[in-house]
Length: 640
Ligand SMILES: Cc1cc2nc3c(=O)[nH]c(=O)nc-3n(C[C@H](O)[C@H](O)[C@H](O)COP(=O)(O)OP(=O)(O)OC[C@H]3O[C@@H](n4cnc5c(N)ncnc54)[C@H](O)[C@@H]3O)c2cc1C
Image (cartoon, rainbow, N blue to C red; front, side):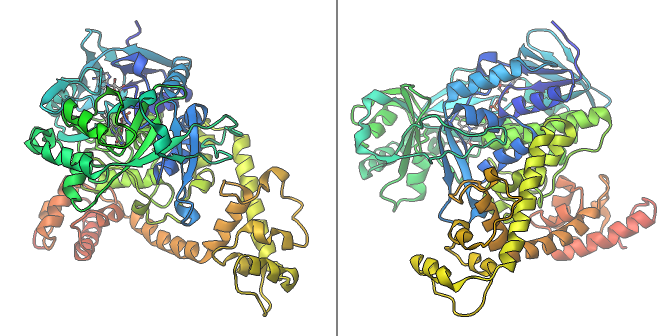
């Protein structure tokens, strides 16, 4: 067995796969060490990828040259664009995935990747030399050596599962916990915290009366995640929607004293935004029903995932709960829901490159940084993998800004926000979300993927051609007067006010409710440069029309956001030395001083986003930074 590598990735989950693939594809001799190779890329919870803001992350990883989007397109069994009722900035793609097929695809991809060795072992400790990573100890006794490592241990570090009064050591159902690794990092100076997440019971499909639920169909045509997928033609599976009942709530309420959450058995903090069903009935006592999305775990597979009723109640309570839901009276529960507590490393201990501060050369990615979700994990894994390679080569790291990508928002939030519950991405976290749309992830990021050699140049040429075509189309719309005949007929057909004064087609397209396809016939001459494949109708997909709509409808807002971005970039340029003596600066509020000492932001802009750092603290900080620099790193006197 080979023992020496250039990079070792611990973990074969969503973060680990992206990290290992990115590095190996860049020609780095990489090892992926995981507890069970047959569980590579396992989806522990929801059989789905994407969703609000998470879909944006997947599109971004894909544009950069990652794998999650392509694997989802291949394993997807139902595709939907969420949030269509709202503006395109917050549309988000989501796919139900055959989780078994997904695992198979990803395992095949990593196993057949040149430069990538897969090792099944349990890592028990990290070896360092003068604060630098040098290798790993495994329970099997073989030490592994490398100058760089990406740790993506997921929910496995001292994982403890709860089902009612029963506690089972394990990272997730059927898999052991990694008992020693977090202790080894604690001994190296890492702060360790504890979080919790949970999953619902799975039931057998043929024991459920699906006819009693509202069917939920996928979009036709399906919009793929990956720029490498031309189209998805396969049949889509059906999902269903139903609701809990008041009886369900009574059952859970009466059994709260047996819930590990309410008995005080769970010390890890769970998610506020994705609570268990017992948590929901306590927190929202007036709500008479809660949604349950019924989702197949795979095509032709017998298990159904019950999205919305994650629980750690005892098995008998889970059975009673299920029987109280119409359509589930005879349901057979294949696997009970459970909660899992695990160790994580509060992310002020990583830089925005994902390299840890206590141990140089050791990068941390995924759930171990306090995040939750496959997409958040994949995004971090990809960035950590790339940055480990760039560090190995002595190149500049890849740190996208908040104005460039949701990935940038994620990295920055981890560095600046208080993570006291599992962190997940939302569109509301991105202040520049009109610019960070899922439809333009390729415009924003693909050039990086091409530069690294992870994305084909031809793909970028197609994107650049589209951007040019959209720009020309916008100019054409601006130049073209709106022909009142037959234009007003079209407006009237859409219930819109007719036009009596001269206006351009661009002004008409700015109107809410008017789509590009509505006014396209009014264009006297089509731009010859628009290639036929770019002129798909604006049907909600990422066709040419929807790109034109975004450019036109958000015109003013985008200009305003660009102005804000210039201000932020100015602040980003003001860097803060890693050893800046906050403790010696008079005038900082106590809270700000404490937070700045803990987080050690890399720039003034980052400092400004830390909760508890006020505008007055920032002005003091900026003044002292100038003095600190001009006095050639001399300590700032307390009374300065
Ligand atoms: C019960 C449960 C419920 C969840 N519910 C949700 C949810 O509702 N919503 C949501 O978004 N996410 C949920 N998740 C989280 C989701 O599974 C993770 O966010 C995602 O899988 C994290 O990816 P990751 O790559 O960081 O870690 P994981 O996918 O957990 O992968 C970790 C990998 O590390 C390996 N590993 C760990 N320790 C060692 C070691 N010492 N040596 C070698 N290998 C090691 C494991 O074998 C595994 O391959 C849930 C997870 C679980 C277990």
